[in-house]
Length: 191
Figure 1 (cartoon, rainbow, N blue to C red):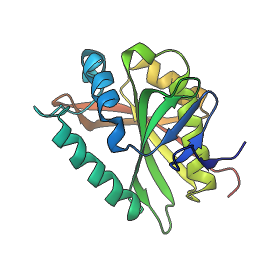
Figure 2 (figure 1 turned 180 degrees about the vertical axis):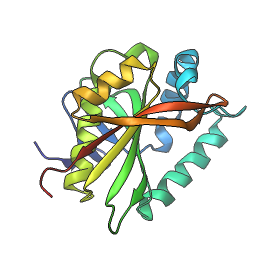
Figure 3 (figure 1 turned 60 degrees about the horizontal axis):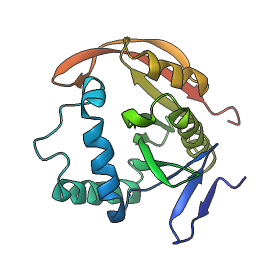
Figure 4 (figure 1 turned 135 degrees about the vertical axis):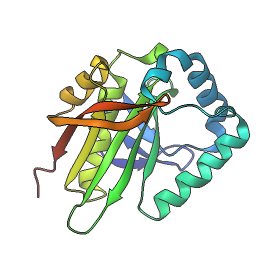
């Protein structure tokens, strides 16, 4: 299976088991906003505080500009996750804080729409993103973190091959409060 290929409209995509990932595009706005709105209560405990205009078209356009700049500058790579069988948007993943030089690492974050959670899509996406990070971006390590009470996220990371490495106190500000996080990492075995 090719790691990165182009789909029918020329967009570059990363293939996984039953899913594919690609950079967000303007045509994804309606699906993205619908999934996020329907999943607001499900996602809120695990994410930074949503802005008042979080799901607006203008906010989405701003995000697309930032994603493009970050990717161009090798700082971060935002991706949407689609179910392969019907091209349904099921979630997203981001490789951020890309560090080069002696570190060669990035941080991984991800989300799933509530209606798509628990079906293995995000685990497959995380595996594909890690493969992309190692084989295409030539990174040595990918890090991830989740709140101790987010059992589903911990399972995703463990199934994708991440190792629990410790606890970070007040690591990220989630839904308006500084929260402890479990730290995970995976290392490129080829290096």
